Image 1: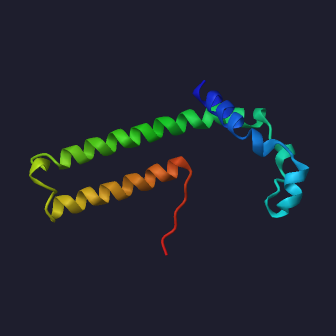
Image 2 (image 1 turned 60 degrees about the horizontal axis):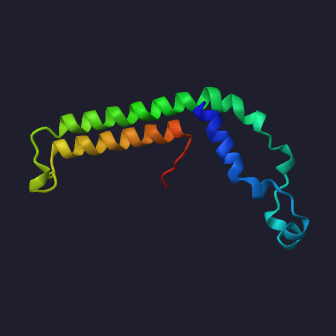
Image 3 (image 1 turned 45 degrees about the horizontal axis):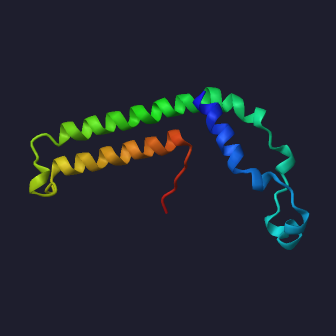
Length: 115
């Protein structure tokens, strides 16, 4: 249900992009949407019902495991006294963040490239 609600909300926000306005499009031909006639709600429903819930669960699990791991590795440090000093524990936590944020982006469908 959440996926279908998200699709309906997204479609309500894209109304002005789906509306073909010849006067506007004539002024800005480079920005004219040529695929507007191919947009249909029913094409998004399978993904909204199948893929989106799985992604949401994976993203939530990713965040929960990240918080648990960082909490475990931070045992014994008092953050009221200041940030963690450089050392093995800080490097491990940094690598945990790198791994879990990369996994989060992968599940969210975002690709990154380092140059």
